[in-house]
Image (cartoon, rainbow, N blue to C red; front, side, top):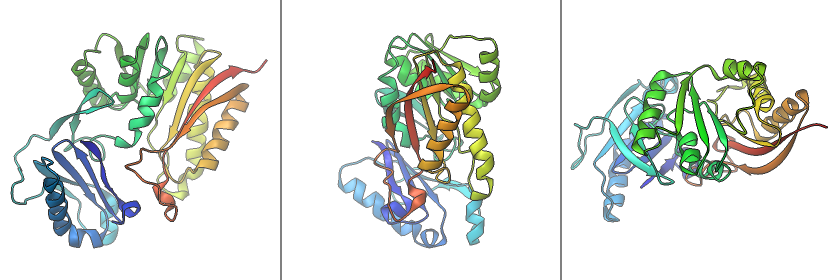
Length: 309
């Protein structure tokens, strides 16, 4: 019920993204070609899903993206008006992913309201969580931390700089009866990791780093490399010897080779050895088109971090 139905060029629709959250479709139109054809495409998508017996109550457009202006289009949001669709909903829908309930705010939330691309990475991360003291950094609305808590983590601290995001994270914890096992902390992750390392607190044997993209253009790639190196360096310094680190990049400009090299530099700088447990990419409903580099954007590593002897 919850998946990316259309992933731009990788699905043959350049500039069009459509996510499904139960009975709600959330679309983002970033190219003029798709803008001119969107109502026809929405109608066909609706017809196809309903013919398969699927209930679709509304389609909401999240075209509040500056990129549209480069093609002469205005930004905007709103419900799509087609026969049988509602336009009076409050913008919230409850979904279930990996057995975890989430409140998705598709009107005010980031992008289309929820990041579906990490679905199987969250499930993989949860497999290491039983009995662990987990620090979930850049938690956004709490997903990695909630998966770990539900899997039996000893404790979870979920950190984000946005109090609004943490309000949703706390609500999601309560939806799953995990409010007593997940602590939400509003803080700058870079500053927090430095502070905890200085205090030599070995409280965490499992750290998850899922930062926003540090670069959205090639012009800022040097700053992005520094950001990824620093955040991983600080995470490695803090995690217990023999503990685990999950680390991600969601920028296609930070490609696999560059991301891997940057992590390796961070480990070298803090005298850590990395044992790779797993490498993953985005969920298969975000297909990677080999002819389109931008479709391969999500990199997800799991390491065991060991002190150099």
